[in-house]
Length: 311
Ligand SMILES: [Zn+2]
Image (cartoon, rainbow, N blue to C red):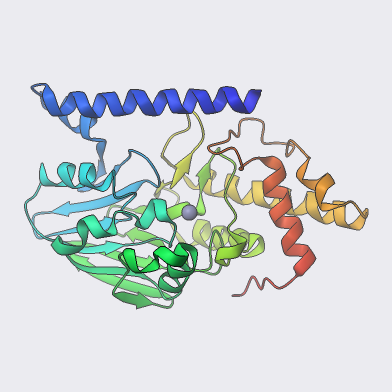
């Protein structure tokens, strides 16, 4: 019941957002209102975000170049592009996919013809193809792949995509805007929302915990983080505290799963657990994501023990 209410709230929120988007197309705009209508928000130093549906898009729009992080869906990417075009008519120098999921790569085809390069971690294309199955040939893929790091200078900004280890998927990366001190986390943080742990796509709970540790320790405390997904009412950006909150949630799930295994409890019993102590304000962004599913993924990882956090 609680879940249904939350889902209704989210659908309601989304429909209100869509109405606002449509209104933005037909009503005269004033500065400020215009950006809100298109879902565009600048954070600092020409770096900003676009939110509509699916994973949060990041952007750098500089007089000498444009970089985009993730492309949401084919249905929402045109709105993101319209927002970019309000600020610049340039071609896009680079589109970085933080991982292969369709709500982060589905808009690749919309941006392909006006983008020089689509960049992703080495495993992204293979995972994207595998997840798409028969539809694999219809999708648009990264043309430039990297193992650990990939860097580009745009204007006075330096952008670095970095893969740590298997975490949310087997091919995640973060994207650092060095001078703005902003890190786009892809789906390495579901801010106050139950996370999706894509075991079929190479995820590792232990790897995810280690990646978050590394990320939190290698960026200064004033760094601003952009989150792929958020719970009801939770902010899309935050600090190291949210990065570590995600780590603690995953550690909590792993701990519960470990104790359940030691006590000989079944998977069925584990996925029926409806809370992780210390995380009362997490909400569900999808019917299949909840406390039990989070603990269940940790339980499966421990059971199979094929996941290597050192990746
Ligand atoms: Zn994802």
